[in-house]
Amino acid sequence: MNNSTGPMADFTSIQAAVDAVKDGDTIIVFSGIYTENIDVNKELTIISQSGNPEDTVVQPLDEDDYIFYVNANNVTISGFQVGGYTWDPWIYPMDSGIYLDGVQHNNINNNDVSGEEHAISLNLSSNNTLSNNSGSITLRYSDNNLLNNNSPTGTITDVSLHYSDSNLLRDNSVTSDEVGIGMDNSNNNILTGNSIHASENCIWLRSSNNNTVSNNTAGPSMDSTIILDHSDNNILTGNNLDGSEICLELDCSNNNTLSNNTVVCLMGPTIELRSSSNNTMSNNSISAFVGIRLYSSSNNNTVSNNYVRSPDGSIIILSSSNNTVSNNTVVCSMGPAIALYSSSNNTMSNNSMSGCEGVKLFYSSNNNTVSNNYVNSSEGSILILSSSNNVIYNNYFNSQISLQNNAYDEGNNIWNITKTAGTNIIGGPFLGGNYWSDYEGIDTDWDGLGDTLLPYNSEGQIASGGDYMPLVTPAGPAPAIQATVDINPGVLNPKSKGNWITAYIELPACYDVRDIDVSTILLMGLHPAESAPVNVGDCDCNGIPDLMIKFDKQNLLPLLDAENMELTVTGKMMDGSMFEGTDTIRVLIKVK
Image (cartoon, rainbow, N blue to C red; front, side, top):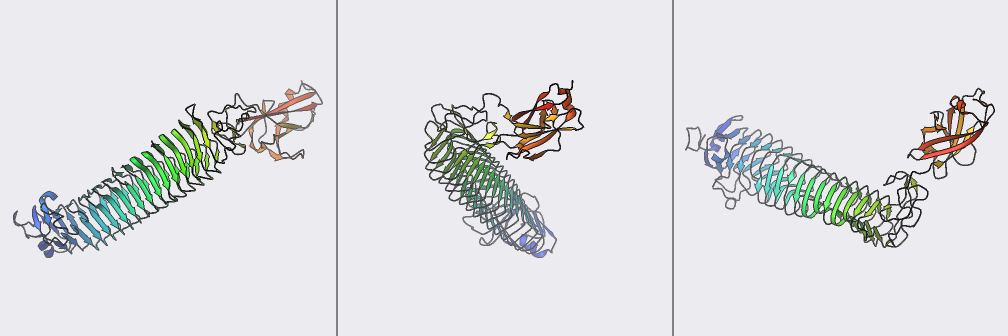
């Protein structure tokens, strides 16, 4: 068909062709400008002959009606400019250029659809494909549709999903003066591989759950790049985000996962949670004025394995509790690396922090745990104001300016735990307090804990108590743990028929014989203990557990060259520390 200005054809209007053909037919439209509103109520393929939307234009006869209204399944519309050269949305504020109403399995592709909003609209329509179109797209109550390689542009919201589930939005290029992709009450959708540029918000989810937003490029935007508003159980992963204010904003949204995103934000916090709980933020790379901020009862969140670089506060928690901040690398040039304000029962562990300030606990931030962190700061490693009952242990505190104290604490806090066997943050054999770069005491018993100038109180800057077990590096190898060894038999007849020498090993009270590595035990530094039998008991009934082991008697016989023989048993604990002990036996017959 054509519009009577081109080659001979059967029809001069698209509607006339639609009315005349039957299901399964194809209508080929020659280049030209067609002014009409088309109702498609049959299973048809309607395509431009040139395949070029620029030269095949359909504009409305009735500006208050749809240009293409489709209420049939299995319809293809391809290769048109819908709206046309003279179509002006301010003069013809129609609802949609192409409108699918209650249909399935339609294919709308390679069309240029003009319009401010709803250029292409789906209502109660599922399992349709929209590809390689320009113009905004709206889905209402429409599920399982594919939006692929479209280029929506507009001034309000370019792609809108309302009560629409399980749609796939893939590899679209979206440009908007306000919101790029917006969802409300829409669940189980996938947004992947899209490029989104919007003046205000690139992606906005409102009351929308179980969606996946992955591998998109979004921004720059002047407001929040991605917003989750009352939206739960969504996954945001692998996205590259660029924003001015907030890049990832969660407002009253729970149980979401934000992972492996690369985020750059010029002014505001990169990730901000307000009244949002049980979210996970992990393995993100963040560069921003403020890194991550949790506030207003954002509780039970996990912030882990992120790289955060920020000039003015990297991870900030305000009026929020029971959050875990762990295994993050934090670089901050001016403000604190991690700061808590009026926030309690949080855990900060295994983080690496460097920059201007280390850890801050302010204004009734109580009952928090700070452990296993590396803090290299230029203005104090840890600062506590008006906060109490925090436990701070096994941290590496290094204030890099000699005139700046490592710690300031005006409250009543706990700076060490009970001496506990285990590798501490500087490789010592016990957990206790913290490593302080300005502690000048010494370790007199080689247990890796300072024994003089106690408690460490940062030259009086810790007001109450201090660290009674500061971690130090021993001056030399630790002496062996002195064990009590009882050899049985105590009187040895080399000619007897017995095959074994039995040894019972007791350790000092602060050690446990169960921590002995049996495979390392040697008699006289030469002969290993048998791997079995090995038992823990109390052979001498003194209330101290002992370890029973056996040695092959034949290995001992060549060493028996005196009537009274001192036998030495050595070995290692599971943590690598040595022990040794001796016992003297009587030899009845000297063997040369």
